[in-house]
Amino acid sequence: MKISMPKIVGNERLRRRLRDDVLGGTLSHAYILEGPAGSGKHTVSWHLAAALACERKAEEEIPLPCGNCPACKKILEGKSPDIITIGREDKATIGVETVRRLREDVHTLPNDLEFKLYIIEDAHTLTVQAQNALLLTLEEPPSFVRFLLLCENTQTILETIKSRAPILRTEAIDPAQIDEHLCSIELSARSLRDSSPGEWRELLLSCDGCIGRAKLLLDPKVRKPIMTRRQLARDFLDACITSRERASRMLALASAVGSKREEVGELLLTVETAIRDLMLLKKEENAPLLFYTDREEALALSDRIAAATLIRMYENCEEARCAVTIRNANTRLTLMELFLRSGMVRS
Image (cartoon, rainbow, N blue to C red; front, top):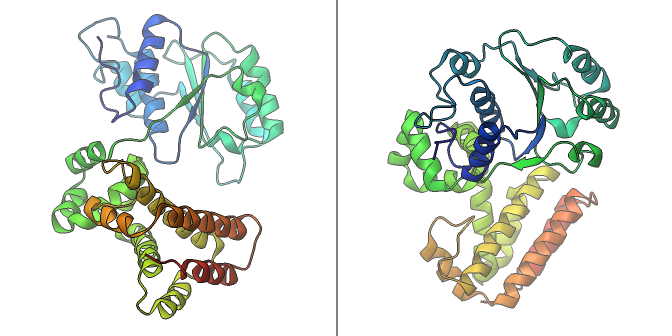
């Protein structure tokens, strides 16, 4: 079977789907490509463009795209005038005027390819008016035009758009694959793994299966607040189950967290992830972990807390997070109430 997009890490199902659509002539004129920031949407888009143009795609033993023919090289080097990227241009949304310019441009014939591909970045920020204007083109595009709408989620995309553009989703990449890939291309990744294996494991779990996010976390300034938040989550859970100086530890945690709603929400979500790990370990010792890097540590902690208590802690954290991020409750008072409830936990 022909190898599909060999330069892309993970995303096997997505790669197979696009390979089959390209080779079978069943590629849709438009797709919505959904996934979190850093999950590889841009990389997939450019490799799909190269696969469409590849001069050797009919050769069974050659990967798709081959990456070496003139068409592939021009596209993957970002030099093809027929691959057009449309973004927000430092604005909060993509407005109707941007889409109107696109609608005028689609009727211009390709320069040197047999097709034109429009990559619409942050498609979830398209205004309703812009989406309605785009819909007119999606309904009857020129035969040589294709669209990729990249978005973090499809909740803000109109159903009429979705009905004309199948939704494809990037897949979370296994930490072991991210480890291997980053250490093969980034000296800083190899250095961190060798010098601080514990922090490296923390990074691999903090990137949410996204190579792009993992690359950002290689920067110590970007990584530091993430590591601090994870340590605060550990301190919170430890204080919940340890009677020693519980009250003073809870007060210290409340002071350390800060008062910014976004930061408090992220911390509480991290705590919820840690609790989720502990609850899963009560059912299956080999359950995949999203927070803990040391399975033995997590198993020992899970054994010390009753399942009903973990559920109550999770519900309390979720309620506090919603209060802060949705209902605009006072962050300090909400945290203190959460800590008071959690401080009554007994192992």
